[in-house]
Amino acid sequence: MRLEKAHAGIAAMPTVTNELMTRKQVAALLQVHPNSVIRWENAGRLPALRLGPFSVRYKRSDVLRLIQNSITRPSQALA
Image (cartoon, rainbow, N blue to C red; front, side, top):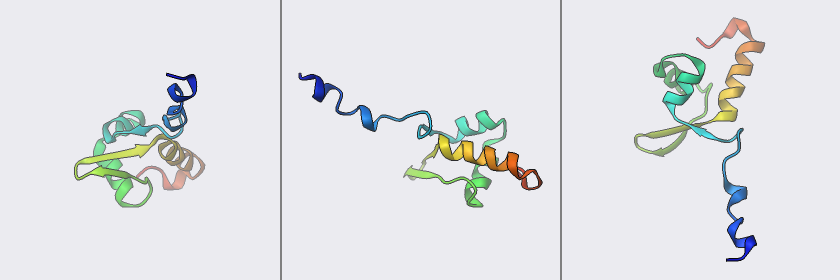
């Protein structure tokens, strides 16, 4: 196998900012209950990627943006 073919898929691999996280991982990172993550998703504050009827993922960059927004706007904290 040529070297170019062996590394062809590297560009599509997740990076730290676009890594996909489960609801439980997001909840653990933010130290909240998974139901809070669902509320933020339903309120449009945290975009979700639906991979199937029971499979939801969140981009790490979106989770970090949610954290940053809660820090810059403390009056509208992660309620």
